[in-house]
Amino acid sequence: MWESLRGAPIEVIRRVRVRFRSGVALSLAFRALEIALLAPLFAIVLRVCLSRWGRASVGNFEIAQFLLSPVGLAALLGFVAILVGTYYLELAGIIRLLADDRLPWWKAFQGSTRMFPRLIFLGLRQFATYFALAIPFAALIALAYWLLWSGKDLNGLLVLKPPEFWWGAGFAAGLAVVYALLALRQFVRWIYAVPILCFEPKVSVAAALRMSSERSRGTARRCVSGLVTWGVALLILTALVAGIVDFASQRVLRSSGSSFGVVIFLVGMVLVLNAAVAATLRVVASMTLAGVVLWLYQQVAPVQAGPAESPGQSEPRLLTPGWTRVAALLAFAVLSLLASYQAIRQLQLKDGLEITAHRAGAAHAPENTLAALKQAILDRADWAEVDVQLTADQALVIMHDVDLARVGGGNRRVDQATLEEIRALDVGTPIGKQFAGERIPTLGELLAAAGDQIRLNIELKPHSALDGQALTRRVIEELRRTGMIDRCRLCSQSYESLQLARQLEPRLPIGYITAVSIGDATDLDVNFLMLKSSLVNRAFVDRAHLRNISVHAWTVNDAAQVAPLLDAGVDNLITDDVPLMHARLDEIRSLETVERLLLRAHHAIAR
Image (cartoon, rainbow, N blue to C red):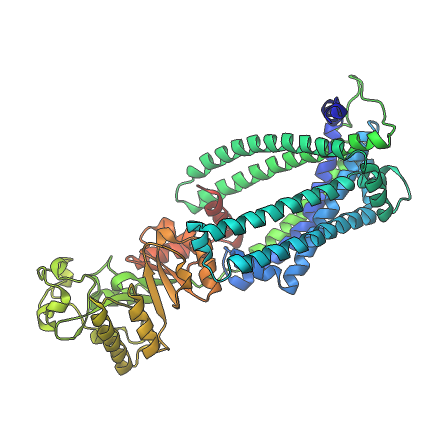
């Protein structure tokens, strides 16, 4: 097998080296054509997605939902058609270029574009075959999922990895390997189709595929060996280059600081660098693959190649008609990019992120007091989160701690003190003279102060299971008495209290508070989840939104957290410092849409 490959790598490298400059020009021409065609389509899709969801971050489930829509399917088919078409055009052009050392690159380009209908039909026919081949494998994987994993928590399966996880994963992996082998076999059978269309005139696509299958019967080992050698070499080169570029990119991004202007500029530089490196690697990949395919084809149907260049010969100079054509194509691509940029730039994002004042706004006033609530209203908080407990005489007081130690009332628990004893405590003076005499309010007082100026997220803090039932009933009674059901929601770390609240008053949204995630919290029967900000990620938010559960991140007091959480798709920021959050949100919302997308890219690639 290896004897048949002797000299092949050297011959491929020699031809690539001889025609490298022409190959670069040809590849640039096709990249320009590809960009000119893809950029407007991409801009249209991006506008549709951003308009629909109103934010710079679109999740996996939302992307899947869009792709399954009529517009999304049409866009996907458009992308596939353009990519397949330009890929086959480029491959055919480079094969012809490598086969004839005297052929100018622009003539190879023209020759490929004349073959466009046949090449695009060839590519789409092959794609359809691979897709049809995948259907039974996908059906078997779906059946395995239904038999082994149906009804089980996927997060638990991934974390705990019980036996059924390994059975399902192993079965799916085995099917994937079989499909990959069959797809590779089919690819090898069709390896000669493009050069047949290039060098054997008046051959139809169907005939080219049939002829390729016939010629590959005795050369399959040589084809596989050549492709594997090419693939391994390209993989090693790509890994080395990608590692170097990633290291440099991370060094640059770490030096960006907190200024959005600097961050956006550096991200733009990193993206341009990565695009340039990717384009260079693609040129190398395309030329070497074309060289391998041409070499394999010449073993079964020799092509008369032109003489190699002598040292005195050179590639076309910069200002030839060919380079003028590629310059025109590049200019067309730039104009297409500018038009697409303008279309995206004009779009206004309108994310619905809300801000909740934690403990009614603990940064600028005594927590859980009327003074804090008034300040939260002045600071334009959308919600105020407060904690409610029962006293020894069954009064509803607004307090966070289960005992009175932090407010100067000793080590007694709240449910061991009366309302009168708790009201005697001055919680304002230790914070500042301007708050002297501030008292711990009752729920009724807080509801009256909130009125229609701010909505309340009331945390139930029961001391026991029995106390939890009494607390939940008393809170709902108070909300009904004051007519505040529609202005409030309940949250708690007691799931039982929340379920009782849902039974007693279905109109009240309920939310579970979690600081440690074991299993998947999105399986809970709640309307929202209050999650520690360090646990929030895009995947979790996507799962929650799929179940119509909103996600609230707590406690966010660092302005640097706002943009990543916004991009993760959270619905609410719970903070002690409402003005700081508003200032950062206003700064983010003042950015243009393209700048928001670059900021989103920073959060995605920076580590």
